[in-house]
Image (tube, rainbow, N blue to C red; front, side, top):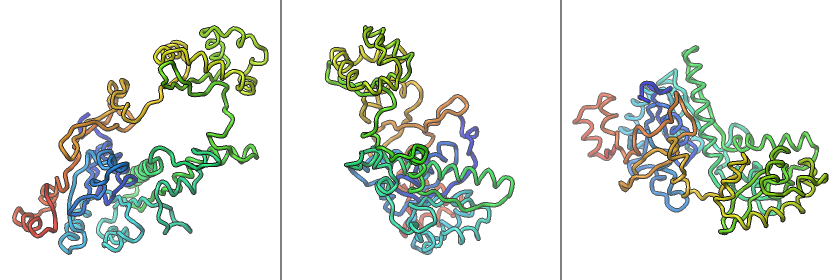
Amino acid sequence: MSEKKLPLAGVRVVEFVHMVMGPTCGLVLADLGAEVIKIEPIDGDHTRHLTASGAGFFPTYNRNKKSLAVDLKSVAGSEIVLRLIKTADVISENFRPGAMEKLGFGYEAVKKLKADIVYCSHKGFLPGPYEHRTALDEVVQMMGGLAYMTGGKSKPVRAGASVNDVMGGMFGAIAIISALFQRKTTGEGQYVQSGLFENNVFLMAQHMLEGFMTGAPVVPMPDRVRAWAVYDTFTTAEGEQVFVGVVTDTQWKVFCESFGLTDLLNDPALKTNPMRVTARARVIPLLTEIFRKMGKQELMDRCEKLGLPYAPISRPEDLFDDPHLKASGGLTDITLMNGIKTQVPALPIEIDGRRLGTRLDLPQIGSHTRELLAGMGYSDQAIDKLLGDGVARGA
């Protein structure tokens, strides 16, 4: 898919972001074709330098972006950014409350430069009593019910991904695209926000309404009675695990027939799924013994043939070799800062029959500084001086 055919081609986004939430928003916009310019400090976005569980942040969320490295606190650096903003359609930021205003790049200041700007702030909390609190994915998961639902009554557990940061960035992108669409009619920009806590509450909506509709306390996932009689992870002959589900009466019939469980199929006490749920203590040990004698691939092949829900228990590193992802464009190429090539998951959407991949590789610090400064009218001599004075940095 050529860049001119991408939905957001021609849209210029300037982002002041780090970590996950803000960069995710920019990634979505960039993959959809927008020119996303990442404003970085002279020594680079600190996310570049994270290790351990943060090592994947920068390479995951910063493809298809341009890097402009500039000292925002200097007069000349501020002037560079203000000139850039005049050319932009969108500003995206996830700094702490008040930080952008202190730098002179808050919404009210920017609106005076570019009246039709769409300005998105990614915050821990939307306006209200909590808005000045410091928020992290962990914080909002704990206070928003997700940790309780994930870990159970006795031990709240953070979900195994930055779900609120990622989804919060996605909702920010939705707000931006909506504002851009509305601007076509009104000619006006606007200020939009995305909230980390509110995103988590949105995830909890089905459980909130479950409690309201049933009048009973909501039971966390590890502690609740399953809705289906067979909906479990089983250990195979090799000691590996496979999830197997049997979720309809028709599936129960074909399952029992295939595995020779005639007695269970003909048992009147197991005729319906609710009856089988009640009898789980009797049924599951029998299935556990059967599956323990089967190989992992044998069990999965049988479930595939029967049309039953099943899944191997994969680790993140296994996904690089997933045959479906490899064949369907689900992974896109990037080059890490050390020059090593690898792949990263593409956006989980398809447009015009194609997946959206990497157009611009991960930028080095200031990779596009010279290009962008020249585009704003700075002469080669002026650019050399800015770089030499440390106001800006080029790759």
